[in-house]
Image 1 (cartoon, helix red, strand yellow):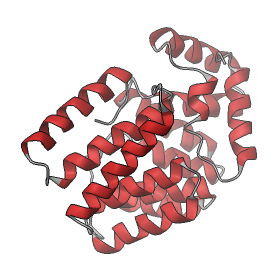
Image 2 (cartoon, rainbow, N blue to C red; image 1 turned 90 degrees about the vertical axis):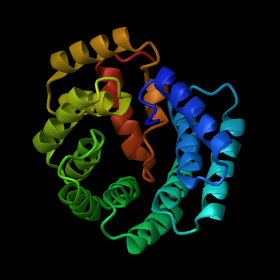
Image 3 (cartoon, helix red, strand yellow; image 1 turned 135 degrees about the horizontal axis):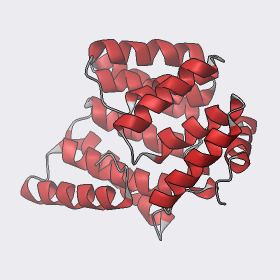
Length: 238
């Protein structure tokens, strides 16, 4: 249900629907079902973006109706807000999630992502660091968030290492590959970036400037444009 590919996202959705059919009051199933619609929106997989948004909203509402204090449901709500460019709302709801469950690793990681895209890299680094200490064997997407924070702090080589780790752990995740290419271009490693972009595009036909642009959730849109310029320099197709 992490949605790293179109196929896994669809499979995750079907499994969550099956879980809800068995128990309509099982809030985590509504949460993960909602994420599949968020991933649809961010990856450009939906033929009906407004419909996908409505379904994601409905899933978040259902999960919060069942359990208003469920951290994962609050983090989904924050993910929807962030997708819509409502950075302060995303930060607020994810801060609430952390306050309710200070030892919940993913709440810190999701808050770190929202803080990074809102322009607060130091606090993003603090929360992803907490997340990784709380979960030493952390999910493969945590290094992406750590890379975000390091990139925001200007630690380019450290960011590149984080994105490379994420690519190794999640080889089908377009975000990790996109940011590895971005940091390679920023570091002057243009030929390496071009080879990597060509290889990922060969394996993942959806991998393009248009797809990645939906994941660049920056409040400062000039940063998004700068990141896309790096991808274009590496030869990523539009």
